[in-house]
Amino acid sequence: MLHPCYKDQRAAIDWARMVLANKERFVILDTETTGIGRNDEIIQIGIIDLDGNTLLNQNIRPQKRKAIPKDATNVHGLTMDELINCPVFSELKDILKQTIGHRGIIAYNAEFDLRLYKQSYKVSGGFFPNGNWHCAMREYAQFVGEWDDYHGNYRWHKLESGDHTAIGDCLATLAIIQQMAQTKKLKRWYAFWIGE
Image (cartoon, rainbow, N blue to C red; front, side, top):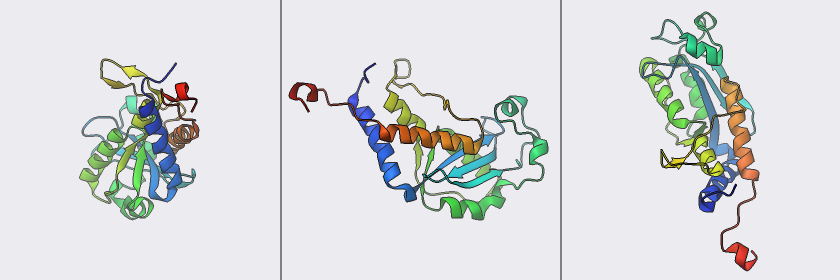
């Protein structure tokens, strides 16, 4: 199937290539949480570099939540018993500052991870990054090019190769970035006529 807008696909490919050409400027981050609501918290955080090296893989004890809903446990497998002796979010201040610093953060569904990061920070304190957040999910949707008339935008895709661990999902996100970067750009429409 042809992409509906070659410019959008080319822009996603350019983004992925830019990221991989500037590896030192970015990290990939993923979280597992107590849920998706406004009072939920991060209970696992993973951060890798753009070579796939693990920089941080940490379970976190929530401060407000006294139990993890079964629906959330069914997704990521984490229980409160496993987290009882883990640090709270604020105790990761130094390692998060060292790991992220001023670098840009790439996440698959960055809007969600940023919101949960803010919520956990609000409850616990600690380190809040001031680098830009980049959404690999939106870039990938633009790359694939399946138009959603209802939302008036490209359809978002689940992170199919992720395993619902923070590090596993970081690695799956990196694989998608690499896939996009290695894709040959579609020719512009006029290139077919002039033999470009």
